[in-house]
Image: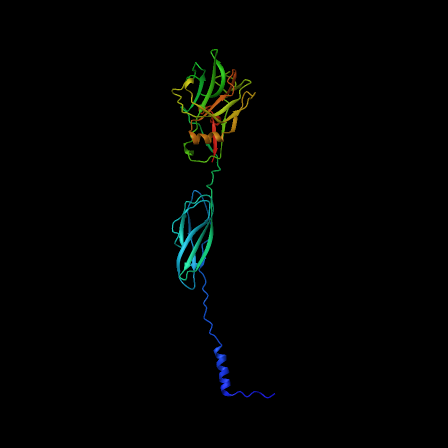
Length: 312
């Protein structure tokens, strides 16, 4: 076949049409958001309640125009002191886990974010027991008497007794009160408390030979709930007793028996919360002839004096 004869005008027109169909593509520049690093996770332990956050932000295409720290989650709403700064302190933290976020905005309106975790541990408890001695005279006293007669006088030996006996053929009950100094624990969370009382080998009351006697000598350890003054005390003016959380020590047929490590945790907690007026011991059933007699804080052998061991 013979090729067509294309004249110059025809070629020129074809070239013009081809050129006119081509379009120029616009130049597109992809901008990236800021790269944010909120900093490493942190851990602290109460009572410290403040953490310092310091973030870093980079943006290769523009400048950073704004920052914002915020709390994503946590057990409370603490105070972010400089939320519009790359670095800030956060105060008022409590025990728990927090997530904080740092957001940065650049001059083109692009944003970047990053988060970090802050763990706040509870305050550590003192795992070493604290041994307390009773406050000595005048905050240790034994009441001896009945509804009409008071025998609580200084000539009776200083010992802690829970008894029911007779004095000159007159029935009397014996109850002892004693107090430990808990002032330093007024704002302390008590983990445990145990009381130890040691039998008096040379009792000055009851049968005068054995501290334990009788077939019904179970006794209570109770919390005293009102003030008392041994210098003016009488049987009729004894302090009131709170029976909540009282501890019952069972009957014993042994003539001597130390009562050690008795759990009085709730009693001590109640003392701290509602007023510390000490402990009282009294027989469960105040019927003759029964006794449980213990050494007081003035006993010559210091290892036999009452002890209160507290862990907090």
